[in-house]
Image (cartoon, rainbow, N blue to C red; front, side):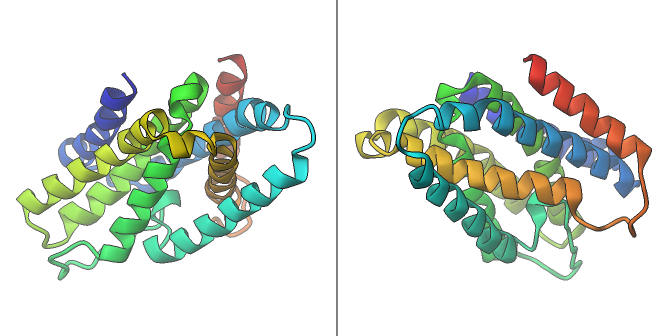
Length: 224
């Protein structure tokens, strides 16, 4: 189910862009805000308490969380911020920049690692993956990248999170470092979600709709 739904989430994002062709970026920002708030709430309500329930390992896991935050900063630099809504379409591009694609794939593989052990996180990752797939699809469709290449790019991207989950289940070496990798992923989630929610892209204006979206996502995550 994890494998199938993760792939479907990318397909849904692609079909929304292909069929509906949304014109308003504000709608995508609200969807991103919902996914960011949901991901942050799941991290705070579930992942962090579970991780720090292990005695005598607080600073150890803290180092891994900080490493995840810094790693995501590097991935964000390579991806140009696609994970949290930035998109810069060049209509003359005939191939997806390799650095953007690799960084997105690394992010997707890592976020798949703890999914097998946390059903609530699974919901958060799927909700987050839909707007990311929409942003990636927008880039691919609006550029000069051919349809076959677009399909291949999206298909491979949709497989990355299931690959991460498969690795967590079947590679014993990674299982030995499950908690450390989970802490790394927590750092990644903290960076992505807080950037989505608090990035200064609205000219310091108060947006009541965005606040209500964030409150809704947080409430749903709490009661899951």
